[in-house]
Length: 333
View (cartoon, rainbow, N blue to C red):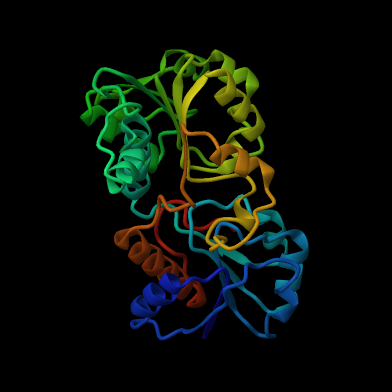
C-alpha cells in the first residue's frame, strides 16, 4: 500500500524509511507542498497522503483527493488548522495526526530562546570569533525569581512549566481547562488578563482556533508589563505581527522569540540564502537586535522525529485494517 508524502525533507525520508520496516508500506516522497497547484498530479488510487504544517488542504484540495481515491490524510504534526475537517468528513476521508511528539523538545527550545535572548549568547558567539571579548551590550537578567506566564497547558505547556519552575520562577498559567495536577506542583492558574499583567515572560503554547487568532494584539499587549519577553513556539496566527512590531518599537516588548510566523508557508523549511525575501514584515522583524527567529525547528529532535514516524505509520496501519488508532486526540475525522 502506498503513502504519498508532501513537503518531504531528507530527514522525513530517513526516519519514515527506518520505521517502515514492520509495515512494508510503499513510501513516495515529494518535496513540494500540497495545494491546488499539485493536487491533480496525485495518482488515481492513492490511498494515503501524509502532510505537514504548511500543506493546504482546502475544500477544493480535499474534494480532488476524494475523487482520486484517497481514504486517509495523515498529518505528521500536532496542528490541524490547515485542514478543512468537515469537508474531509463529508467525503468519508479519515484524518489522523500526531497529538504529542516529545513535548519536551518544544518546551526546551522555548527555554533556549529565552536564555539566548536574555544572555545574548548568539551575539557573544559572533563577537569572540572576531576576538572581541568585551562584555558591553551583553547584560542580561536572572531568570530566578522572575514570573513566567504560560498560555495553554497542554503537554507542551506543562513541560515548559516544569522547566521554568526548575529555574526558580514563579509560574502563572491560563487555560480554559486548568490541570489540577499541574497546579499541585506550584503553577498558579489565573485569568488571561492577569497572567499578562503579572508576567515578565509570556510564552504561548495553545492551538490556533478562530476564537484565539491574534490573541496577542495591540490591546492585550497594552495589558502586559512594559519590557516583557514574548515567546511563540506554537502557531504564528496567535499574534498580530504588526502589533508586535509596534510593541517592539515602543519598548513594550523587550525581547521577542518566534519559531512560528503567520506567513511562514513561503519561507520556512527552505534555503532562501540566495534569494530576495519579498515579505517586508519578516524582514522588519529580523532587523531588530532584540528579536530571535528560528524556522519552525522547536520540534526538531531525534526523539521527536522517531515518534512522529512511528505514530503516523502505526495510525495508518490500524486505519487500513479497519481499526482505530490508539491515543488521545489522534483521530480528527
